[in-house]
Length: 120
Image (cartoon, rainbow, N blue to C red):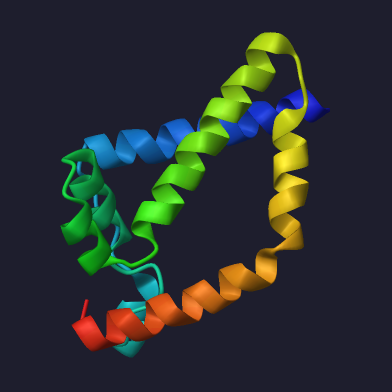
């Protein structure tokens, strides 16, 4: 059962990366309804800037883009390691990050405020 979870996360990561490389943008449902940017607004543009090594522009589009990008990159590498060597390190990493999930909400609020100020 754990292998199916790992394959699901790898598939999810591949889909996200393919969407970014094809420059497919999905409009923000929250912003469409309320006209207020959500904490994730600008993330697609920010990831595209990261792929072009423009980290300053990425931080402008979304403050959380650079940390999230490297988190996802590390997590997907860890998943690949688990699949190739049949280990379960990624599940321990998930449990570790769940312990500090309150920080995630603090960063989301900060990101939301910055997006409102920038008018993203």
